[in-house]
Length: 223
Image (tube, rainbow, N blue to C red; front, side):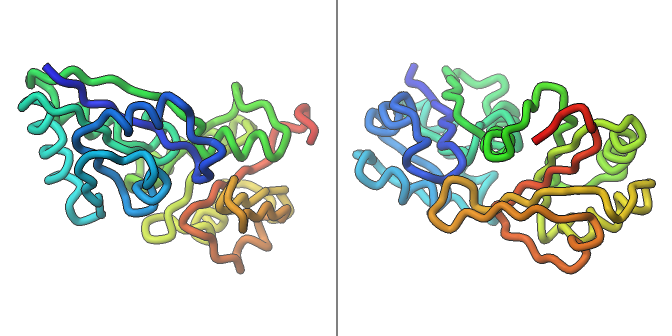
């Protein structure tokens, strides 16, 4: 039985790709990932490279599992860390009941990179991702975190729950428009941007797809 390695590729820069990730890609007969992920490993890919898109995710996750069942070693590339808004959850559903040896290779997530840029401890923050949808339950959890006064770090999605929509939602949930926030875009890449702002100013901002929003509520933690 061959392996299906779910490989975290980090926040985007080659500097943050781990040796374990590169080793897994070099040994894989099949490498599946978004075009941006495949480009990051272009010097390491020896086997078949298959581009993952929003339209073919389910089909290619099944292809990954089927390839592993046939004895091929597979590397499934997941942006950031596979366990935080990555590909781990959907692939676990796909391989359930199959004869597949699944291994997770962790990596630095954009959440961790954002906390590092802001010199913030993130072990007590409330973390959210809206990359998989903005359900009423998730929004209720976000509103609850606001009421509890916890620092919040989240991944917006311009198509599902944009930065502007989140800012309006937080104000409606009780936050003052002057609440300090940080928007971190394209972390670790050459065009990285860290913007210090307020909720009111965020009303007029567009955010990059690769962005993290930090809302400062806990005054004990100073930057």
